[in-house]
Length: 556
Ligand SMILES: *[C@@H]1O[C@H](CO)[C@@H](O)[C@H](O)[C@H]1NC(C)=O
Ligand SMILES: *[C@@H]1O[C@H](CO)[C@@H](O)[C@H](O)[C@H]1NC(C)=O
Ligand SMILES: *[C@@H]1O[C@H](CO)[C@@H](O)[C@H](O)[C@H]1NC(C)=O
Ligand SMILES: *[C@@H]1O[C@H](CO)[C@@H](O)[C@H](O)[C@H]1NC(C)=O
Ligand SMILES: *[C@@H]1O[C@H](CO)[C@@H](O)[C@H](O)[C@H]1NC(C)=O
Ligand SMILES: *[C@@H]1O[C@H](CO)[C@@H](O)[C@H](O)[C@H]1NC(C)=O
Ligand SMILES: *[C@@H]1O[C@H](CO)[C@@H](O)[C@H](O)[C@H]1NC(C)=O
Ligand SMILES: *[C@@H]1O[C@H](CO)[C@@H](O)[C@H](O)[C@H]1NC(C)=O
Ligand SMILES: *[C@@H]1O[C@H](CO)[C@@H](O)[C@H](O)[C@H]1NC(C)=O
Ligand SMILES: *[C@@H]1O[C@H](CO)[C@@H](O)[C@H](O)[C@H]1NC(C)=O
Image (cartoon, protein in one colour):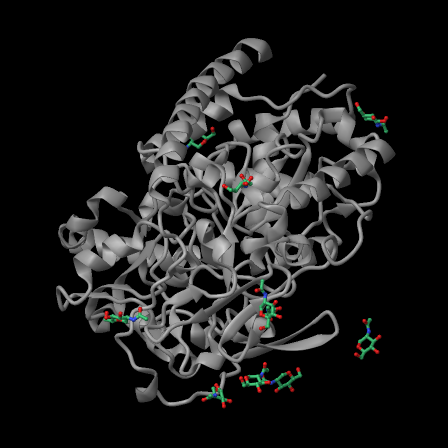
């Protein structure tokens, strides 16, 4: 069955690649001519720093980790970034770029004009707060990788087309045939059979059927994962890039996954022969922090580091060679992760926050990783929001205006309509209260892409029980393998931003009520726990990896 399907897939992919290559060249040509001004990140100066009360960071939760106590706050990014701040200059020695803000709160690069040609982006893409003074600016600025990510392929793949593509890939795509057979291959095949023939379940426990593509299949798959799955975690590799989870900020989910996976007793095995999956425990955040050097142009040395790591483990153990990495997986949230891992790790199951179909994300193989600030989620008082009768705002967005979509959103909706609370950055408030209050009291929370497709707003909206409105073409939402996203979220194409209000208003009240109720039901799947619990975000990430392995594995 393999070869025909495989070549069919290749045919599709070749056509797709050809399209991308053509457009890439066209765009490179255009970009070189117009030298687009990515450098200036605009911070609307609507709110004046002087009006704002100074505020101490509010401690929401303290989680003892790695022998340290971090004060945790869902949106406070100061703790992560102030390391790099000196007066009002943001200086990152590992980048070698100095940036400051001019009187209009616009970033300007004053020390090193040559970098103006590069794209800049905040390290933490989604800053939604203007700090009350310049010494606590919450975003640092990083050059943007300037290769494939510059490509903006004009056509878009809608969410329903993604559904089709996913099913098509499950039907046709198979990973590399193992070089020799192993008992685990049979177990995977058996699991696939059992999932595809799952009995229709009536006792769902705390699962809510309408959230899932097929809840019976999900439940069976999850049970089989609990019963069967064994993961081998490589011990090779030195800190900080390997084995050293980074648990804060916008990329925290990769760190939390690493921490919980390495400590896990139920799934981890030391016997590689028993392993269905092999985990490559690196942090894309630490990789950038440790090795990025802008003088080397691009991030080639980061890629080299990962390639060398693969060479090392492939030379030392037989595990890699058996499937050329197809039974290996990585979990990486950094924006650069798709391009860092597209060479030696191309066949691995890549769990990526930057789950962009236009950046090589492969439906059915790769896994969309939720982008979340990981904390405060255990305070049940913090979950949820106002009852519907008190959700007076139709739609809310606040945040940094970067990337291509947000300026358009603001142009059409900022200060245009009292129902549409669309802002740039919000003024700092104690505990980020304003931002949270808007989320808790709005019916829809707009989640437009920033520089990259993902945004922590998607999970924030779910946490505050606000129906997410995703405006990010070609973004594969988390747990897409199993969740029926359209049952609880709204997808608006970027080109439809001018119609945003009419689209939202046209959703009947009954439909809205149903979606909002489902948002509450889906919440459990997006929460982190220090000790993972059934169906939580840790297990959902692992499950999606397992599920994709099950559906793509081959036997000898
Ligand atoms: C932080 O943790 C310690 C020890 O678990 C606890 O006693 C303290 O009350 C916590 N502080 C806050 C602000 O939650
Ligand atoms: C924990 O921190 C203390 C003080 O910083 C240090 O002496 C100790 O070695 C640390 N323990 C571990 C396990 O890292
Ligand atoms: C901030 O700037 C002042 C004057 O420019 C300088 O004296 C001081 O050392 C600077 N502080 C830091 C932390 O760089
Ligand atoms: C950045 O600023 C620091 C201190 O002002 C200076 O020592 C360093 O050379 C600057 N770096 C660049 C790349 O201009
Ligand atoms: C600041 O903004 C004002 C009004 O938009 C503009 O006239 C001025 O040139 C800007 N200043 C700088 C340094 O960009
Ligand atoms: C900036 O705010 C911090 C607290 O957020 C405060 O400690 C510091 O003194 C302020 N700096 C200035 C220049 O206002
Ligand atoms: C779910 O999958 C099972 C097993 O393939 C199938 O019998 C059942 O009809 C499916 N349910 C739905 C609602 O598609
Ligand atoms: C980024 O652009 C520079 C200059 O255009 C080029 O030298 C460099 O190789 C590019 N980096 C990547 C990763 O393509
Ligand atoms: C795996 O394959 C590579 C190249 O094909 C080879 O260099 C390496 O020695 C092999 N590893 C083992 C453990 O045999
Ligand atoms: C959250 O609370 C529950 C019950 O109190 C506990 O089992 C779980 O470990 C907590 N999770 C975190 C991240 O603190």
